[in-house]
Image (tube, rainbow, N blue to C red; front, side):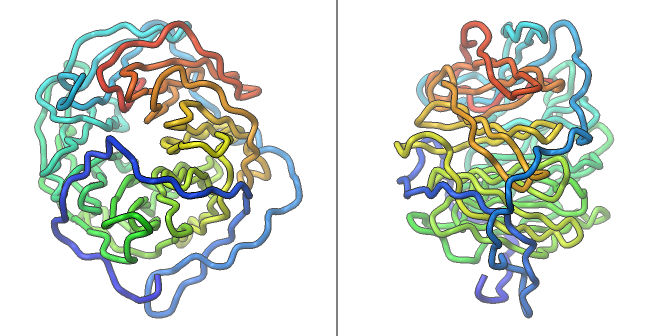
Length: 414
């Protein structure tokens, strides 16, 4: 950022349902390994100049954390959807999946939650959380396994589209797309959220090309546990905060800019904790980002191809295997999943291929806990497709027929 201006705390502007995405900009196809950003006197850190990619190196170390052992039998699957509009659902979809075949069996709906478009689970597995993507926005807690709604709390903004639980299990983090703000709620012993302890609205930098304001799209905790990262599509910026775990308040420590008009949407970390991968919705690209765990500074690299051929495409969710060997990207428009090899201990993505998503507009993808299966929620076809993941090659093989789910926008296998 060019000044020392800080985000403001308070409520934000109007709701954007995000059911349609904006115009597409051109995308470059060069992967660059970034270096940590240097602090800027008088204000938060900004991205430093980026070095060129290093020579080819080995893939990520096999000593990275491995996925959990397979669990046999049916497992729970929760599905986020919209409850308003044509073809909408009645709430949070409840289903099970077979861990061996990936076959999904429907099991009803958790009602009483408006537009539960994104879901997350508490680290102890006993509470499910959903955004209420509307104006005003809210977050709702559901007790598992009985699917009892524990209650809702206002996010202080409009159109919340993402939420996550801090690893300590005491704080719920959410992102308000419509108002461009991030919120923090305390969690009590039952898992229910309390009144909001902080709300920060992104007021600078100015919105990127084609954007009318900030649009916070994700709010997650870095692997170091000491920093929170907020990805804002509207300002082309990733903000880093520290969380006061006693009071539940946020302090900004740095921010990193993408190129203008990139429209960053979702970020995921390599298990080594020194690199992250950013999916850019508007310019149809991904970037490798350097991350400094000591300071929380993120440095954004050069745009890289999604492998979709330059047509209309809006990248959505990006995943990384727990062994740090492969990354997968969901492509809305091209309706495919891109597979990348992760090399140089996380510093480089190498495009391998794309495979059909098996549905229209794959908005969200997620691994089963053992990472043997990958689930794709296809919004426009109202389906969920399941793929087997080859642990050695990362190849995806579709299993069975798609599962029908109204306006499927999120899949959460447990």
